[in-house]
Image 1: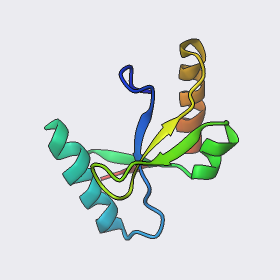
Image 2 (image 1 turned 180 degrees about the horizontal axis):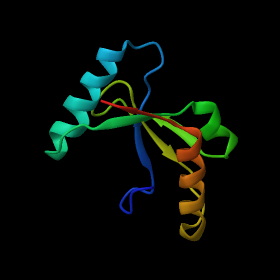
Image 3 (image 1 turned 120 degrees about the horizontal axis):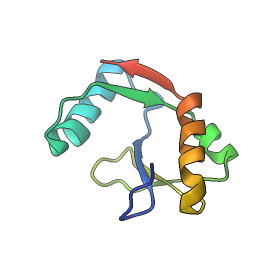
Image 4 (image 1 turned 90 degrees about the horizontal axis):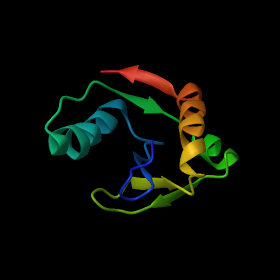
Length: 94
């Protein structure tokens, strides 16, 4: 779901990375920052995001591969779109 504060969803671009590199980013820049264990990830192609008329914008902070999914619709529709994206994603458990 989009953040109430920013209106975006924080993601990391992982194309071309090896598995251990992806898990390292997740551990260091997500789990450790939140003080929670890393349980898994959802892999989703950017093309799927673009097909829903959302944007992907690189931010380089806190990591060079960080990006935000933005351009979400009105709050009453964002949950349905988030579910659609989740259904298109591949869940990979640690």
